[in-house]
Length: 289
Figure 1: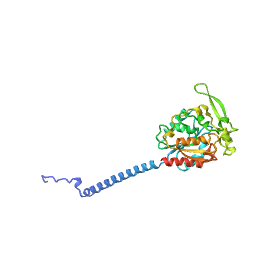
Figure 2: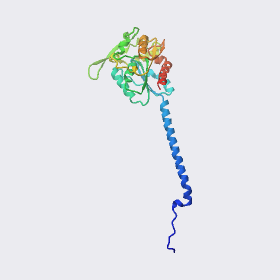
Figure 3: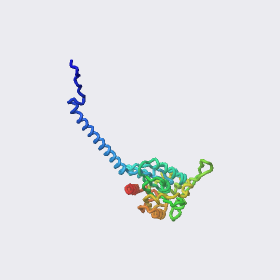
Figure 4: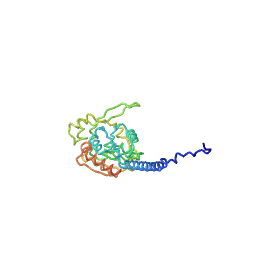
């Protein structure tokens, strides 16, 4: 046996390894390129999705109504691909109702379009403050008060409302003691004052199921209005017997709102003219997205 041991061959020096090593490195390099490309593509897709995603539309009803008053509009917006929320408006006091709506907006990711009908207009105008994701306010035959104005102030600012002579009141107990006063529209006068362009069978149901508003809510002064800083749209109901059309035009002009009008529409224009109402909301969404 020789005194000199035979040198051992390094595994990397074997012919098979010498061939595989460059191939493995090339595959790894290709995988790295592929992963980078996929990551970039995913990031671009996410950014594009965020840019094109439709805003959430939040529909706020007013006094003597409930969220079902938006049903026809909800169906149309959902059919067009918009996420929609139609929460119950407490109708207790403007500050509290606005704080409640504000808490709902705080849970929504992405842009929001706030839509208010009647007293709901005052609520959205107060609730939008402090929410940069609220991109537009849409008033549907709604109150758009200036600071310190109330719904009752604006109702009486122009002649023509039938509400003052159509309301009945009921007392209710307050949580801390004492009593509050709820206002209802007299069922015998409901159709004429509130929804004259709807069939009588429908307005009889609406009158029976109406949500009362506390007089304290209707008399509450508004805070600083969001319509001074957020773009707004306004749909005037030209035959409104609850909020006079002249008052609506005044508020729309003061807010600098993009304004449309339906001459023969009653106060519940979102029920009698759901296509027109939906068109105004989607116009606001498209313009501000």
